Structures are given as structure tokens and as C-alpha cells.
Image 1: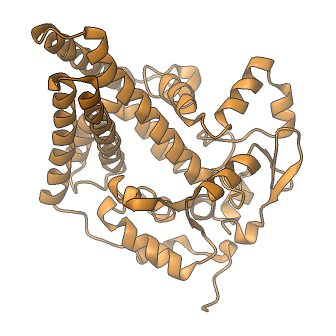
Image 2: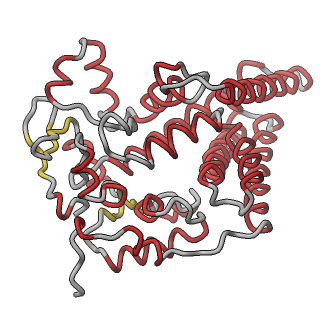
Length: 356
């Protein structure tokens, strides 16, 4: 077996050369965007027109899947990797983000700047950042209970809905995002206008077909939106929470250990579900170079898999998932250890091999 390169000797510039790829032309991304919009429209039509609730439910799942896929198109566009044109990416990203009710500029600031700039650096990256035992003990009782819920194995939807979307991605306050810019408000207004039109269209269809307004709004709008929050919360949790993944409080230590690559995971789903999510689970490659288009991520991740087998790259099963859930509650930043809520050590992270 070829010897792997220790994490603290990796050269990011050299690694990026392995993934140099020309930006996708207009045709393929345009087809993907139109396909996902078509799925969203088709799923909505099934919910609105099917005769029974049982026939409407598959439409709800299609709408949810389309929201996830469209969000990931917007995610790539926000990174500038979907189209070669910055203007096209800005327009496409705003359109693709509408069904997930995500304000493009707020996502761009929080995701591109904070998360990708400082992933797994406490105080800068706020996505699933763990508390230390002292921080957790100092929280008020209701907040400790909330954190236990979030990390229970089923709390990812509630986490993303409240901690991310409500606080940071929809009319976010200056306290939450550090600044208040006109484009944040305009993009939030755009999302609000779309939501009003979405709900209004469903209400009109219900009245025109003499169906229950509450039922159609629930199945066409509310349930897909809540399920979408669950999916994205679950995905991001898996990307940055693992017994072998380190978190940092010290920026110099973070830089030495190349956390942009080592502090994330590639998680493979059964039945090809990761392919249906536009390859976003190929996450080491994505963090190494966010400019890699979704169409090239699988090939890029395979290069990393061959070159650095110690990276956190695994197939999810019930056993591997429960191992993450049970061991990753709190984090000891000084000694790089995962803890349970009582402060007992559950996993030790070796920084020279931080993604083992």
C-alpha cells in the first residue's frame, strides 16, 4: 500500500492542481437546473391534482427531493462553479434557492466566507460547532436541553430550521451575521415574495378544485420545507461531526492541521442516494476546492481517496451512524477529544491523522 502523506505536510496549492477542470459549459448545468425545476413543478402538480391523500404523498416527496436538488444547484452557483459566468451564477443561484427559502447573499456570506474560510474553527464556523464541557455546563437549562435534542440522532431538522435558517438565512440580524447590508434584505424580500406566491398559488388551486386549503398547503409547502430542513441538517451534521474529525479553537493550530481538508467527511449512502444529491457527499474534495463543479466531484474525491486513505471516508450504516451520534456530544479543544454530555471521553482525535 502506498504510504499516505501526513496531514500537516500537505500542500494545498499542489493538491489543487489535481483537480484543475474547465468550468462546465452552459448546456449541461442549464439542463440540470431545468430538470430540477421540472421535478418541483411535477411534484406540486401531483399534490394539487391527485384524488386521494395517499396519491398526493409521493408528490410531497418529489417536491422535497426537488428542493434539496435545487438548493445544491444554488450552492454550486454561489461558489461560482455551476456556470462559467458570474452573472449567470448569481441569477441561477437566487432562482434555485427560492424553494428552500434561502437568501442568496446571506448564504454566500455565511457559507463561502465563514464556513469554507474557517471550517471547524470554533467562533468562525458556526455550523454544528460543538460546545466544550465548560460551555455546555454554563448554558441555561432550556439551552442544554435543546443541545441534547439536536445531538440526539433525530434533531438535525430542528437544528437547521432554527439555528441556521431562522437565525442566519432569512432577514438575519446584525447580531447573528456581523453586518447589515442592503442585499441581505433584498434577497430576503425575494424569498418572501416567492413564498407568498407559492402559498397563494396552492390556495388558489385548492379553491378552484374544491379541496381543503389546509391539506394542500401542508402537503405542497409545509411538509416539503420541514423535510428539506431535516435533509440538509442531517447532511451537514455528517460532513463535520465524526469521532475522527477535529475541531479547533486556535487558528494557528487549525492552519497547521489543514482543517479545510481533514475536518470533513465523505459519506457514501446506500442505493446511490448520494448521486441524487448532486455529489455533495464527496465533501473532502469540495472543501479542498469549492470551485470544482458538482459534475466532477466524484472523480476528484477518488483522487483524494487513493492519495490519502486516512481521510474520513465511509459508507453510512445504522452502526456507523449511531457511533457518531453516541460519541460526538461535546468537544475537548485542548486535548482534541470527543466527550459525552457528562464529560467522559468517547474518542481521541490524532491531529496528524485528523480524518482517520
